[in-house]
Length: 104
Image 1 (cartoon, rainbow, N blue to C red):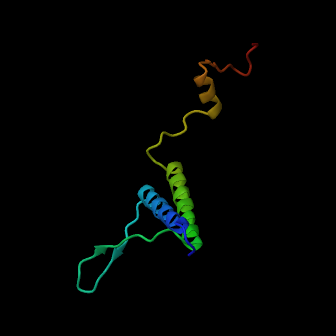
Image 2 (cartoon, rainbow, N blue to C red):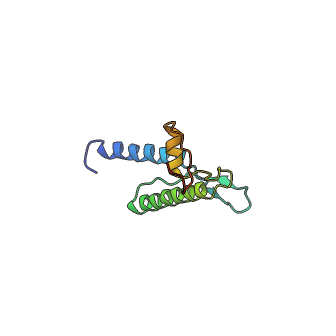
C-alpha cells in the first residue's frame, strides 16, 4: 500500500459495517476442536463481493420468509369485511343495504 491511512480507514469501516450487520441479523459461528468443547469463533468480515452478495441474498430470503409468515399467520384476524367496507368505516360512513326490488 502506498503511504497514508486510507486503507486502514477503509478496513475499519468494513469492520464497523460488518459488526452492524451481524448485530441486526445475528449469526452463530461455532468451531469444533478435536476433543475440546464447541467454541464460538469470530464471524468473517463482509469484505469481498462474493460475501456481500451472499449476505444480500440471505437478507432477501429472510424478507420473503417474513412476508410469507405474515400471510399465513393463523393468529391474524380473518378478513371479515371487504376492503372497501373497511375504508367506509375509516371515514365514519354508515352504509345500509337495500333490497333489489326497492323503489329507492
